[in-house]
Length: 144
Image (cartoon, rainbow, N blue to C red; front, side):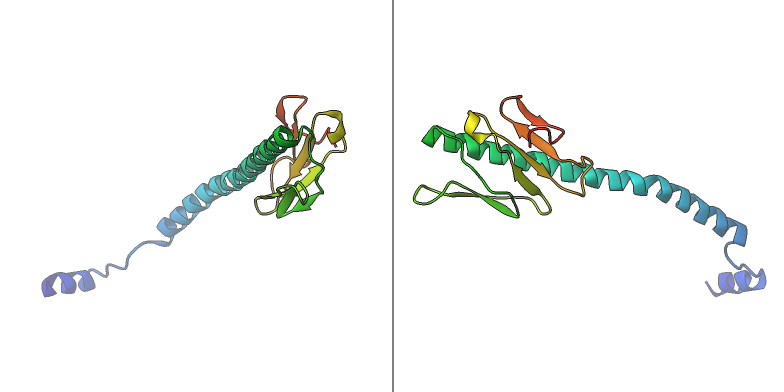
């Protein structure tokens, strides 16, 4: 063991050259330049998935309310959570995912419902709409 250490000291084995280190740094930089935008895009898609999930949850609560009362509820806009129904009837509170903004439609009295949930961190700048008349989730805010 001591002989091996003495031999490496005598041969002046000093490690990596500057060129080798620069090549490794350039390769790491290229890989990170490819990976970071892909990662950020995946985060936006995850936000969109949470918006669509909240859309379906609120739509199910609207349909449940309609089954009980034979009329769709009127709901105020909000973030964090929304309340469906009013006292003395049973009230359902739907908790929205962080950052999601609920905007109801003014057409609830027509026998259909439509609302928009948006999140500024997602890919859809106007949010996603749920229109019961057009068959569910739409990628726009055309019903408001």
